[in-house]
Image: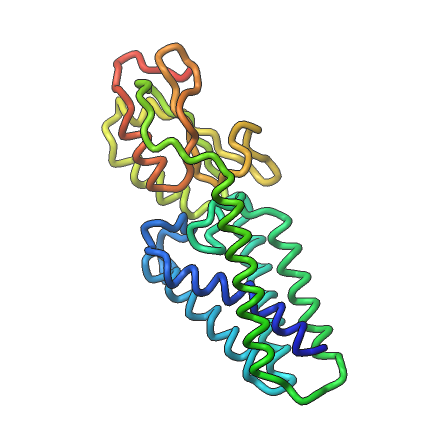
Length: 254
C-alpha cells in the first residue's frame, strides 16, 4: 500500500520536473522575474529539485521516502499559496488556469497522503514498482494536459485591429508585476499614459472575461473604447501588446 501511495505522489512531481527541464524557459510563463529563481535558471533549479524528490520517493528506505514526499508537497502548497492569481507554470507550457485555492488544496492533500504513508505499517519497499507507477501516473497527467490544452482555443497571436490603449491588471503581491512596471517606466510618456492599470488587492479577482489568466494580464482597447483582440498574460506578452499601441496625443481608455 505504501508503494502505491508513494508512486501516486511521485507521478505529478515527475511530470512537473521533466516539463520544466524540457521546455525552453522562453516558453514558460514563469512567475519569478528576479533573484535566484528568475528564468532561465529558476525553472531548471526547480525542475532538478522536483526530480531529486522523485528519486528519494522511489529509492529511499522508509521513513525517508514518505518524509521527502511530505516536504515536497508541503513546500509546493506554500508556494501555491504565495503565487495565487499568477499564471501556473507547474507543468511547463501547458495553458493552465492561474494558481488558486485548488492548487493549494491538492498539494495539501499530497502532504497529508505522505503523512499517511509514514504511519502505515512498514513493508519491504519495491523501488521498481514505485518507479513504474510514477511513470504511469506522470504519463497520465501529461496526456490529460495535452488533451485539455488542445481543446482550448488557440491564442490569437496577431490581431489586425489597431489599439490605442491597453487595460492592464496587476496584483499587489505579484513579483512579475513589479518587473513589468520597471519595464514600463522606461517607456515614453505618451505610450505609458495609454496604459490603464488596475491593481487587484487581496481577495479581488479578475473580470470574468479574463478568468483563467494570471497577472499581469492585459487586453487591447480600440479607438472607440472597445476591448479588442485576445487578452494576454505574462510579462513578455503584455509588454509586446503595449508596444503595439498606436500612440495618439489624445489616447484614453474609455
